[in-house]
Image (cartoon, rainbow, N blue to C red):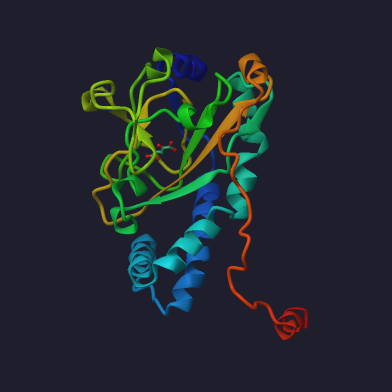
Length: 271
Ligand SMILES: O=C(O)CCC(=O)C(=O)O
């Protein structure tokens, strides 16, 4: 079956080997390089080369200096490689194939580095049952592109979907510490299907597809990026005035670092 037909039927589809694994590895490494700046500042040493050495150092940073972990976690959301990727020609063409006549980015792309060792509440490493549309409220054909940055099997918390749920409308939700979840009575555990993926695969899903994270039971980090797109040409989106429920994005009134910078620091920066 054609991927578009599968997408229309199930509300999600995996595109195997859709991108060069080197490209997604480079995005992961760029994010890791941001965290490494904080490893240096906090004198945290990676005890081994490779992913587990990095993961253990990140867990150490999380425990030693949560503020620095959060600072780097936020900065990592702004890496150039991810932003280049999400607006690349390849992604634009894919969105057009999925029927978005005028694709626009809905909210900033997100890079996830999921592990129970990097979370103070469960929702920080494992999303409950939900539909992205409830927080997006965009076009009816809005789409999420979900990109594994490592191979992800069920043990690493493969993303899970309820096939066909995108056609059932917007499900009722209950507020929780994460955001809002669809109760078990409407989205029972046994209805979810995990999608195991390799780095280089892409998963595309409708913003109406009911999904949730699997459980990462390993000591490893589950890296992925998630981007939501609307269609600025979709008639109901236009008729509803192109709502954007993430409107609050404004700067601090106060200086984060009081009395910074001094003229001397500026002169040194430009020397
Ligand atoms: O990556 C996951 O496991 C879930 C992601 C998710 O729920 C989302 O991006 O809305």
